[in-house]
Length: 199
Image (cartoon, rainbow, N blue to C red; front, side, top):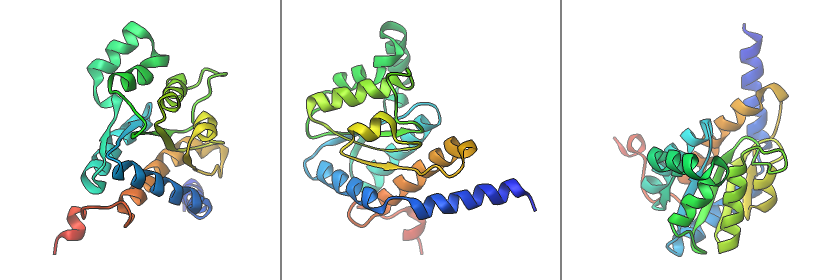
């Protein structure tokens, strides 16, 4: 038997058991409120989290009836803004162009949650600050100690650290676990997934 396989899967079990269910419920409530007031959901992530953001946009739109977008899905605008304005403001400026307002929310997928002092994911920090400025809600699923996202969010799920050498893979994996939980939650789900509705 491969010891690493056992270690990884055991760590995933421990993360599952240690997830804060109250925090998850708070995110559900926040998203229900956003949908009920006709708000939009802007999902932000970098690297693997950008891929998760793209997938999550589909699920929130299709399964939960929430108008959702990811800036990283528009590679032309993303790279133009990065080239012309700099990487640190790329999400905040995109949100300005989208007329983010108090009815909307931003949803952060990140391993560390952003840290301006150490110049880690400053684009997330600027986006969070802009959301707060206009009165939009801030939520997310993040790892480690949650970073800037956890400090400023209205509701946030922190993926517990089980082993220091598995922080990134487990956090990014649990982005998907948590967002699939959210879009499957009876308070949010408006349409069945294909296989569950096929007889």
